[in-house]
Image 1 (cartoon, helix red, strand yellow):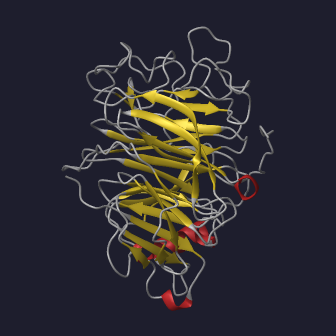
Image 2 (tube, helix red, strand yellow):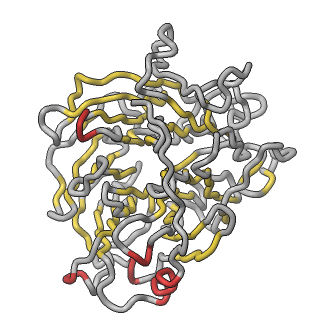
Image 3 (tube, rainbow, N blue to C red):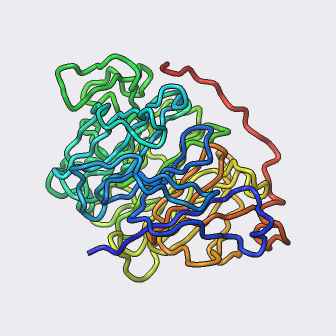
Length: 430
């Protein structure tokens, strides 16, 4: 039996009335929220996924309200611990075409990515518009991944877990582990062209095109959808809206949690090591020689003592590079940990990691009511405001500090990037 879980935190431009409360509660009563996102260029609405209810709710943070009727209510949703409604991606041209995509685990334990359109009512999806993009059966109930998102190149990125169980060697797993087997899609990040003609017309479970510049196109024995491999359970990813770099967390087995990074100029094909590596270390019992093409995480850390519901004693939550209105946060990558209730940040310039900060005890992340305890996800709206989704039913807003800065925030402000990387302009598929 699972407790009702939910919480969001918005880092937004200042509200003088909130100067004494860095985090302000603006809504409560959400059920098992697992992700929050807004359509491109929109910040008035935040779309929150209720994991086991299969609902997408609209939160209006400025009004401190949650719409009574869901934007979308799905049937046939699996309700095991890590299963359910897990991902939502608005098309980059959503304002003009109304297209969005959802990711969920159905009652038969299959991952589904489905395309929808909004109805004539902007607050209600058109359920009749559903079109399957991808369906993939999962051998176990955990490690569903679930985040989906459009890259700056117009491709849809789909991170997938290794199929669940433990150590990537249970029933339904390759002899070398799904993460390292290039002939299976599990344990990978997929990169799909959802705008092109279907490359698999005879396969009802694959309705997309393969980008011709995917790294393994034309290579025998390697699935052409694969963009990166060697993943256990990639939990929440994002693209830096200024540099186009790709970030994601990968949940560890028994000892390490990791944050992974892929530079914008990457042609893909990175091997992040699982199941041979857990973080920067050899995986106990199943670890072997380090893959020749292994890419170490930007940051990894040890599990904390104690137990954690669903996920063990540590479970990393990937986040976002902050590009919103708070000057002191610019360029900091915010991430968390579900089990330990952490909110942390670091800065990475492609080579060096600096400015690591634990914000958990800081006043900027101390709510006026309630507490941040189960960081299930981060989110970002169209204006770059940052959200934190916690397993506890509340929505919090973090205004821009109007009073004196804490020592940590003052340090972050002094460490702003002196150099900005020019944003590239890659071709898109539409």
